[in-house]
Amino acid sequence: HLDRNHIMTDHWDHHVDLLVVGSGAGGLAAAVVGAQEGLDVLVLEKTEWLGGTSAYSAGTAWIPGHRHQDDPAADSAAARDYLDTLVGNRAPKELRESYLTHAPRAVDHLERMGIGFRHSATAVDYHPEIPGYGTGRALEPHTFDGRLLGKKHFRRVRRPVREFALFGGTLMVRRAEVDELLTVFRGSATGMVTALRLGLRWAADMLGWPRGTRLTMGNALTANLYHQLLARRGVVWFTARPTELVTDETGRVVGAVVTSRGRTVRIAARAGVVLAGGGFSASPEWRARHLPTPTAQFTRAAEGATGDSMDLARTAGGALRESDGDNALWFPSSLGRRGDGSTAVFPHIWDRARPGIIAVDSAGRRFVDESVSYHRFVRAMYEAHASVPTIPAWLVIDARSLAAYGLGMIRPHTPAPFLERHLRSGYLRSGRTVGELAAAIAVDPAGLARTIADSNRYARTGVDEEFGKGGHPYGHQYGDPDHTPNVNLGPIERAPYYAIAVVPTPLATSLGLRTSPEAQVLDERDQPVRGLYTCGNDANSPMAAEYPGAGCQIGAALTFGYLAARHAARSLPRHHQP
Image (cartoon, rainbow, N blue to C red):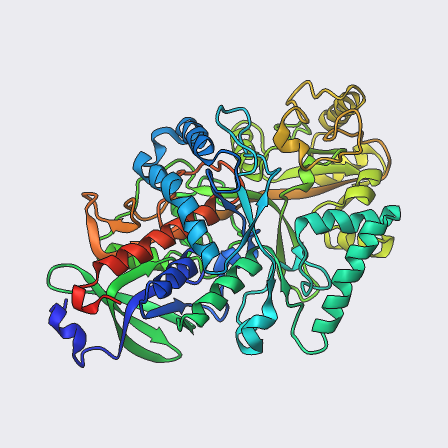
């Protein structure tokens, strides 16, 4: 502990107003808003790369009541009813009330700073069966020209998931552009124009840049936040890790001890410290303690999300919120092997909704409407696994649908030699008959044959009599609009037959530090630890372990990062006010 008078003495190696731990969407939002408020801001990133898991993500923010909605006030009221039903008392109501109140303001504030968003007007919330669900609450980040950062800073932006980009991960495209590009196989002029436009820009970039500079999704959001932070004289230290939070004699957090490139430095933070380290998805130890069994062994989260910053908060008096269920938000992911020998964790976000794809357990039986959200799909895996082994589950498809839609790491219209590579690696299993496929994936052959026969009947009638696939608007947006009579149902009848295994993988963790409506870390008595803030997955999720719609994690990160920075700026002694 230090007397606060020592903050301005030689006990410190470095002085800032706001110290931010972590460079994901929440940390960068806190940093850039703090810099806009006039604070001297330093961001600590423990890895070599900027953006954390946010850089891998779609970058979408779920913002009920945003200004693009026809009636923002009515949308906020409906979202309140929706969240009250979905979340209930599994997370503090005051947290989601703060989110609903401040999320539109946070986005408006960021947009005035030059961090723009596009309205995803057709995006459907993940629980259309609950009153109050909405359409169009998602905001997608504008594409960003990475050349604005210059080569030095551009190289620091974490690359996207390789399998979600083209040409070895060097060309990023928006999801709407993916749909346009796929029309090239049908001779579409629009698709060809899109391919030419993107290809020419990419080719020009590759003459002097390490990858394409037209950034989309989470890469675009990360790079734009970084660009705006640099423009406001904010600083990021890479490979910098706080090892201790320093408090004064009153218990207020006044700085941190930091290791950076072999040196240990003491950094004073006059306005406070913001913890935005990304939660604990990448920590095997934390996963074993707090996630359901069988424990997930892989994650698509960034490698730095190991719970370190949450441990730091606890040493300074902060407390974890009690368990909120399974404590995570989930993807079903397939595991592949890249050419360089690394493991690819591929999240199955949209492909499950395509016609001619079913998911089965070890008995060869379906256990869920395959077109539900990724989070709900994994929940169904765990529920089914309690009685029949369902981890891994198997996505089953025939030759026609695999060629038309692809599956996992296999893209549509993949040539036979490349398909053979996936078969040799074991990523893709096949059989000339349904029985052969059942043997290849070790599921009950009679059960699988019966399931495929039932599914083919549903495809002909357009009605899924078991799980209602194709009966909800959420699934419709990812089906094949040209397929009849149901955009989500198709036959599995053209040999050879194929399957890919999927396992639960946490994309984020929802169990975090107790958090006030103004993003302050709370202690065991729910009192603020003064000078200490949190946002992103270090903070307890305002939605608990529920997933209301696309971008709820990014939306909460931006909102509580914004709140943390503004509260910290107001907390400075008057003679230090910017």
